[in-house]
Length: 151
Image 1 (cartoon, rainbow, N blue to C red):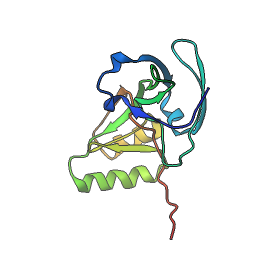
Image 2: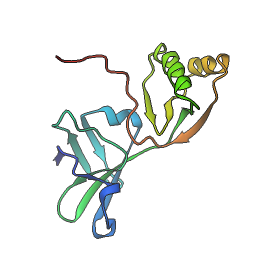
Image 3: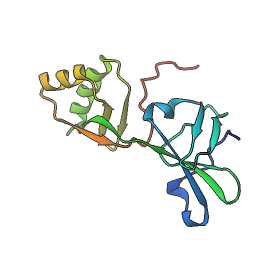
Image 4: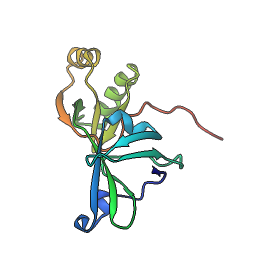
């Protein structure tokens, strides 16, 4: 079966117990993919081919297989660098430094999150920027800055 549209998210489901839930675990990098072949925790194979350009897989994305069965996307925990700037000025300075490294990031809840990279760790230490390395589940995929635009 090929699933083409994300139907919901775990946050939007009132009573998950009324469904038979199958889960597929993905690395955060897989969230950027529009076409995937996955195997669930029940051993079932599905194809995912997202048709809408605006749709993106997230931790907790749900596909309704039928009225009773759902497929839930779960992101594996991965070690990430988490930076919590204390001011907007500091956020800007850190964003500028990280932009020069061309690493994909997620900015969420006032934090900058990116993959552990020795070069970035060295840069953060040299610039005396407070950070932590922690194993977390990303809600959405790390992304490079998209500099393309339309008129």
